[in-house]
Image 1: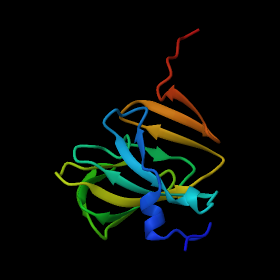
Image 2: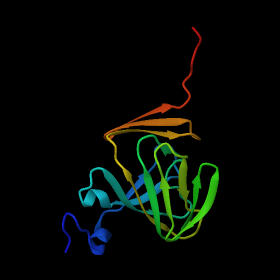
Image 3: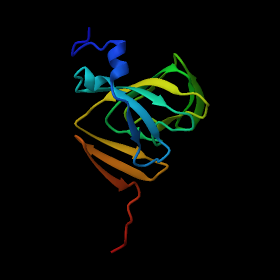
Length: 155
């Protein structure tokens, strides 16, 4: 039986898989089921994500005001945190504290990568994409993108 606090494996399998493409990285396409929303979590996001071969999870980034984590369930991928790059496998856990190093997960292998990811949901946040030279300001569901390097003219 499934209640608003409990999702059975069958109920999770029945959740719609949302295909999400990142606005900064066109190769970052992930298939996600919103577990946290389904059980009423408001301050914590929790997603079951399937990353197909050749895809990135997101754009290389870090948040100013929220922590994130990834727990690998099946398959393998490549994690990158700051200058470090490494293989991740089923059972591995990655944690990304607010204002920590930029990070991204990729799947260069020929099978799907399945993982749980989650993070805190502050009412507002700033997320930097250092390699893309972009910043997004988040307020609720609103997003505003700007350049990390503002043009300055001498007066």
